[in-house]
Image 1 (cartoon, rainbow, N blue to C red):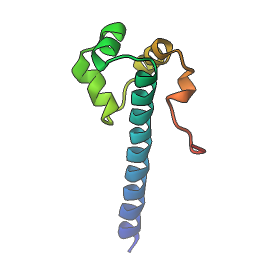
Image 2 (image 1 turned 90 degrees about the vertical axis):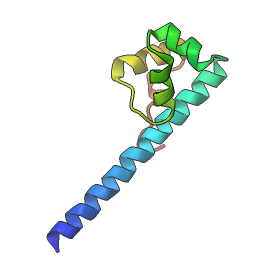
Image 3 (image 1 turned 120 degrees about the vertical axis):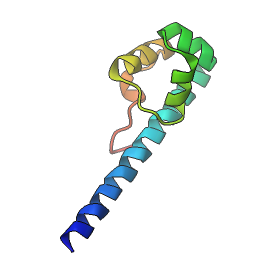
Length: 87
């Protein structure tokens, strides 16, 4: 019985992590569109391939240094790209 509960708990954590990543990806896309930039322009500006940036908008987690570059490029605080539990 205990292992079933543990599995259920880790499934909830997985869903929470996925939901958080979906929100980061949504925030990246929203910020990019608000800045009037294409995915290619963003990728070029921060020095990554457009396929990598596209993955971030589809839910792959960007590294912290990339998030800092993105926030600077979009002219937004880093915190606006990272959801908190209150969001």
